[in-house]
Structure formats: structure tokens, C-alpha cells
Length: 349
Image 1 (cartoon, rainbow, N blue to C red):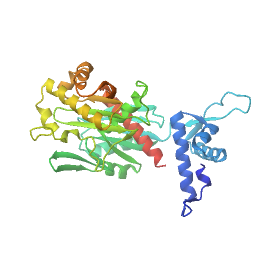
Image 2: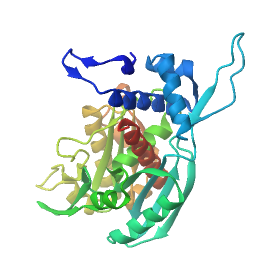
Image 3: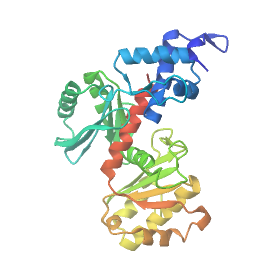
Image 4: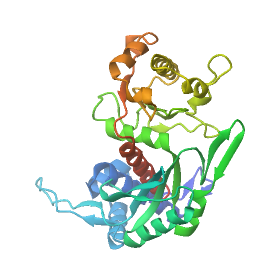
């Protein structure tokens, strides 16, 4: 379907040509990102946009410097087709997270090629340091969007951190940064970003996982709390009030929740807790992969053999998900955040 040739939807609502043009451009971006490069014919076939429209839009994107030409394809008997790709110097993505007073960041193009990465010292609550850092990077690179990973419940440009039952601290970092930088800014919960990073990284390792149909859970154990990032059919599960994955608030036994139980768990109790949590999530979501990670000392001393041994008490072989121990959370954190930020940018073109 060629959106540029549609004037009406449901014979009632007129669709503005400029909006349709931007929608078609978004589709072209998606093809170039998914394929890394494509010819006009490949783009037209995949998007159902006419060749004439594809040619026109590619010429405009090329003039703006958003798209560049690659070498001509090999001839198959006819005219050699021109191949196009995203300009690696334009429309870059800046993603970062703040951890223990340190900014860990990455600048990537829309094809996820890293242009720069590193870390700098910063005070987590000093928004001016963060904004000055981003303004500096925006001056050095053509940054089109910013993705920020935060430890809390994200609601648009704000996030909430629990300070006790019914006590919440509200941080408006995202709103302040967007106002200063004047480019799109997204916030995402840290565990959701890590889970999505595993989706991107693990699709080649497990044959039954693909990005669009992936069902993955990342469970993070600190010494005093448990949370999870949940991916169902390739999409992050945020929940009605954005509280999905807050496993630590699950009621457990003796009137206590899981967070309270975890604080005083021995090694054996911790393994048992993991096994039960995995079995509960498996019954509800039936994920392809469960990744276990975190800073909890008991978790650091575990191996897959002991986890599988306990999990098999509750899950039959036919229902058993793949289980993995987290390797490098920061890597998956920024990788997932980069993909989510790029996707948000393209979807809002």
C-alpha cells in the first residue's frame, strides 16, 4: 500500500500529504535499518510503496544527508541497481546511564555502529552536570535523540523511586533534559533496557528466539530487592501503571514480600527463591529465555547447574525455558537502550 496515494481513511478522515510522506519515510528508514542497506526495488517490495515514491523520497533523504549511496549491485542481465544506506554520521543516538556517581554512555548511528563510548565522573542528582555533558556531545556529534536508563518506575519523562510503602520520590530528569536539548528524549527502566539488550544479543544463540517474537525475562537480584525486565512478543511489558516487573513486592510468607525475604536469605534459600520465581514467571509468560543477574553475593556464587537442579523441581522438561546467568549488564543495558531509542525516533518520524 502506497501511503502517498491515499487521501482518506474510512472515507471520512483526510490524511495530510505531509503526514503520509513522513510515514513513508519512516517505513524506508525501517527497511534500511533492518537490512543495513537496500535498493529501491527492495524497499518498494518490502513496504508496498511505489517505486516512483521510493525514488522521490530517497532523493530527498540523500539531499539532506540522511541517506548515502553505496556501490551499484552486480548486474543480473539488466541495469545495475543503486544501493542505499543510512548516513553513519547523521542522526546519531546518545544513550547513557548513571551508576554510582558515574555516567556510562555510548553514541551510535541508527545501524547501532558505535561512534564513541566511555564513562565520566558525575554526581547522580546533579542534573546540570548531565545536561552540560549532553550539550557538549550534541556540539560534537549530530545527535537526534537521547535515551536514558533509570532505576525506577518510568512514566513518560518522569520516574519514581520507592522510599517505602506508599512513599515515592519523583525525578523529572527527562523533562528537564528535553527542554534544554530540544531533541527527543526517552526514559526507560534499567531492567527493561537490559532485557531488551539480551533480546538483541541472544537471537543468534538460541534458535527458537527472534526479535519480533521473543519472550525473555531478565531477573535482577540486589542484596535487598528483586526486579525484572519482561519482553513478550518482542515488546517490553510496562503494565497499566508502569509497575510490571516489580517482583520484590510479591507477597511471600509470614506477611512478608520477596524483598524482605531476600535480605536474610542463605545461599540455599536464595537458590530456592530463584527457582520458585522462575517457575511462577514460566507459568504466566512461558519465556524462551530467563536471564539471572545482579549484585547479590549469593547470585555471584551460583552456577547454571545448581539453578537448573532446583528449577526442575517445579517445571517439567517440556515447559523448561533456557536459563542463563548475566554476563555484562552494562553492555546489554546500553545495547538495549540504543535500540529502543532508535526505534522510538523512527516511529515518531
